[in-house]
Length: 356
Image (cartoon, rainbow, N blue to C red; front, side, top):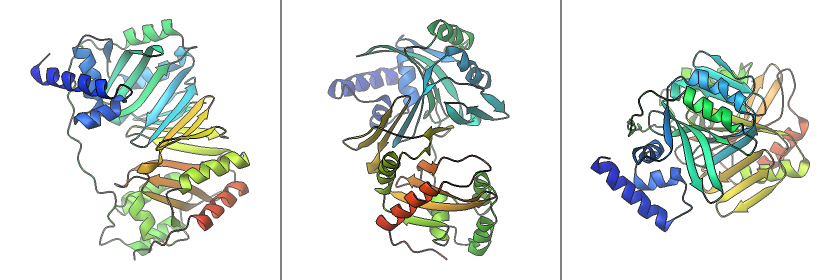
């Protein structure tokens, strides 16, 4: 182990002694390194960390053979955990889709490194597959559960084991992004016209790209009929309202390389400090609501009528989560979801001027 990694190892050990329940992502932030670097520190020390090869497009469909697992996708404020089997995973160029109980949109271009990790925890040995982007940020993790086929897990790790167990990992510095500014030369009339002519919510990203916009500036720029700012506490209120009304929702949480989706009712809600949690069988959400700095109700036209979302962002404009009422292509939006959103707009309205 080189001196830099020896020093990092000692700093991490000291930090864990002070905070034994500290998660590795938070430890990395405190230590000023990436999570991938801390994972490979274990590899350097000879602990059970195996580097995987980069054939991620073959590996992910092979997860189906493991049986039930827990899929975890997170960002700085939202942790989305879904237990089930990866079924029907398909790969289309640099895109991957999983459309079963574990519902994913995968952007393979953001997958840089992968590891099989074995950890000793207070609850016993925990096995996982962990994937990171070029900046060392976790994009997706897959954890073995009680019913996982561990023989298949071991065989999969051996099949995709990298020939060279290179450590430590090399990461690139993460560039700063401006996700809050509205371009001075924005053609607001053209943007609003494009918005009014949308036929599919999936076309919105292309429209923003055309006008050099990201989401928060886009929502600030348009009329209230398209996007309405509301108080950040509306996210928790929406979850509570969905539980009370037994409304089936769709909840999206994204990392730099994966969007993970839960569809269905939610039942068990609990606050623990800054975290507001959904603790259901097969689905957990852990939301650090103190990091929500912007919340918007957004309406987009489609061939099936208006589709309404509740979207939350951090102080830098990074998207944290999106919530919709459950719907499928060819179906109109649920009246109960529209009523829930209308109630939120009335109770949690904010004054935010449109920029023209």
